[in-house]
Length: 254
Image 1 (spheres, rainbow, N blue to C red):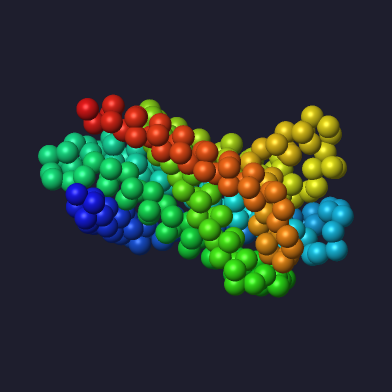
Image 2 (image 1 turned 30 degrees about the horizontal axis):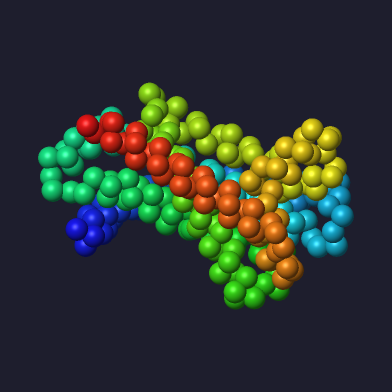
C-alpha cells in the first residue's frame, strides 16, 4: 500500500513539475518581489534604519526576505490546485487506481521544489549584494530545515485555500496577508522601535521567532529559546492545516 502511494505521488509530482518547467516565469516572478524588496530596503531605506546591530543591513533583513519568498511562492500551489479541481482532473483521477492522498501530496512536493529554487535564487542575489555569513554547515542545514518546514506548513494552508476558493483570484489572494506578516515582525526593524500594541503583536506572532532563529544561525550565535517557539508554531500550523485540508478534500471528492 505504501509503495503504491509513493509511486502515485512520484508520477503526479512529475506531472506538476512539468507544468512549472513549461512556465519557468512562475519561479522567476516569485523571486522578483523579494529581490526588489532587498534592493529597496538595502539601497534606498537601509541607511535610515537603525537595527542596533553592527552587522550589515542585508544580513539583518535576509531571513525575513526568505520567508516572503516562500509566502509568495505558495500562492501558485493554491492556484494550480483550484484549476485542477475546476477542470475535472480530480474526477478523472477518481476513476483510476490512484491513491487519493497522492493528488494533494504531488502539489505539496511541487511547491517544496519550486520554493527551494526560488529561495536559492534570492540567496544568490543576496550574496551579490554583500550578504556574508560565518555559519557552519550544521547551521546552514538547520536553516534549510526551518525553511522546508515553513514551506510545508504554508503549502498545506494553500491547499485549504485551493480546495475552498470559488474563483481563481480567491485561490491566490489568501497569500497576501502571509506576505505582509513579516513587515509586522522583527524582520526589518527591531520590535522595540514599534508602538507598544504593535510591538506586542510582532513579538508574539510566528514570523518573529522564525526570523530571529535564522538570523542567529547565520550569525553563528546561540539560538536560545526562539527555535523551540518557531518549531512549535510551524509544526502546529502544519498539523492543523493538514488535518483541515484532508477533511475538505474528502468532502470535495465524496
